[in-house]
Image (cartoon, rainbow, N blue to C red; front, side, top):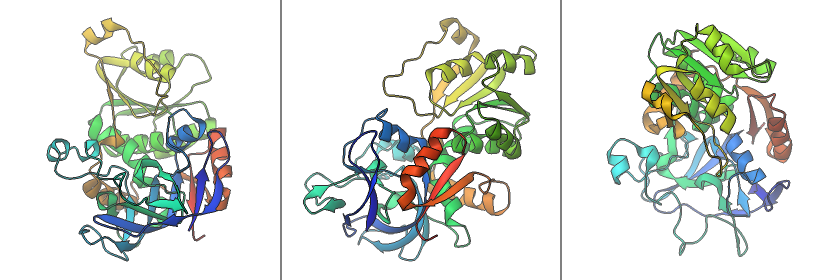
Length: 362
């Protein structure tokens, strides 16, 4: 099969012919139709996050099941699936506690003494997030494969595998935003737009979008933002305080992962307010927050994949899209073939696009 292979940090990925193993145990072989290009992949490409090389990146995927291992029960060949990176065992304490996205086991990957999933002769390739979805096929643990209705378009379904579940879930599960509450979303890429969409769906009273790109702020309004703040025009904290008559907001969803924006988000909170961080920061990023603010019961938390419960949430998000409440059409800014994977990352670096999607059968 063809795959985009990263051999050196900050270098172009090259399209190579590599081999993929047959499924064993609880593994599923999926023929991919569409893969979203996410900032988490960019963090590996630039070296902001460390990862073994050579590697196949990509983790926001949808496709058709081709073959399953003998122990697979969740899906069968021919099923249309979204593949979610929160693979889980089902029997550790996190899984039993209802937090499968925090699973502690290593069952998602093959053991070191087993044949590799991706290889080229004697050379092995690391699969990012145990997926490696910038390839024509992926071999993954069945717990990440969620069957979806067949009338769902693949180029929109793939976004649900990461960006939508992260942003939407950050609002509805991690932060548990209630009707009438005020919400700030910092960063209006795919994750931020999904968070804005979710805030609108749950009935947030005021939704303030913050970004430095005017076109993204315009897009944020179509997703449900009631107010938009250009981050290049003065202090964003002062502008939020002005909009809220000095009170601050109940919730901040930080979808960038920068020290500055995380600290700004915390400063925007009202008493008892909660900041939820979904942006992936560099591994060496450290935060400075005023200790006195915690006596005002201001809180900060992380959100891992929006606390997603794949088998429950992913079909629900598909239904929300099919009934017109989840705005995925507007989220897809550009579609490219796998051969243009490097150009897709160049698009991302401009900051102008919400999401690019790699299409395998366009």
